[in-house]
Image (cartoon, rainbow over all chains, first blue to last red; front, side, top):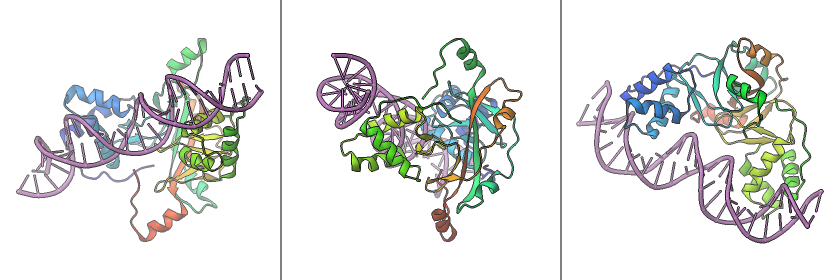
Length: 143
Length: 143
DNA sequence: GTGTCTGCAAACCATTTGCATCGGT
DNA sequence: ACCGATGCAAATGGTTTGCAGACAC
């Protein structure tokens, strides 16, 4: 998983606020959700800036990018290596309490010409809310 | 992993050709790549049809959808459960010789309110071609 | 025959980018 | 002061969709 050293980056007000807000949240927001939140404190911020800074911050190792599952990207203020579950119904994301799997990459690399540098593991499932709804009602997977 | 029974679907010429071509390939093509290939046999096919049918075929369990990594979707004619590596430089995808991990979902579900129905594991690395280029030249990871 | 599928083109929507101005260091 | 960062708006690019005619069963 991505563990490069945090580069020193210019800490503008936009980046500061973005970082603060993301670290407050446990919801793994999308860029647009984050934009709406940050806008309360910086009404003139632009969505382009949010995208640019999420990119800068993730390259600097200050936030984690969850770029999986064909859906929109989501972000995590917690940069410690850990896995996630994504709800197949509503897209919500949560952390999984499961230590990082060791030795996987070495095993995968055996007999391959590739050099393997990391892995991404994401679980799929139903979040508590959607599970409740599914029990009685129609379960119709999205996509 | 997705293991639902193949529904009986109307087997149109477009679907037939799509399926045949995808099964010939080991390259895990994108929808657009597949469109270019299929077009050689069905010159009037449209990209919309390719997308619609890849969706139908994957729901029917006849092809596998690799919807990971923030990049474009890719497809696999091999529907047996297996993992993939994606090149961080060029996006190429290959199969990984590693049995499906057992008991992972049960372990992840412990202490969670979620019901976990599957997982996605994808490796990242450098394909043989890009690794060669990287050794001498500039290694500039994409994204 | 009829309900689904197709081709075509326009729409969508998350993300990126060009540009002139602004701001951190 | 200088170079990178911002706001704004337009562009991009993969994917989806509305519609009228065509086709599989």
